[in-house]
Image 1 (tube, one colour):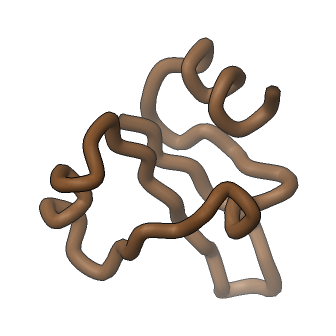
Image 2 (image 1 turned 180 degrees about the vertical axis):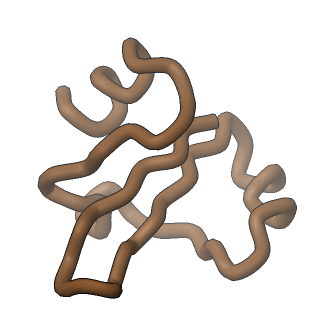
Length: 59
């Protein structure tokens, strides 16, 4: 699981969660499935594996 954030106009903070299986997303209330095009351009890792974060969101 990865949890990333993007700082936008204060106090708006957007969060994304990455799970290995789409069915696991139901455990995260309020989160919905998105496409790669919907992912942020400048994410910040909040929790999770830095190496996986780099592979998924930065490369």
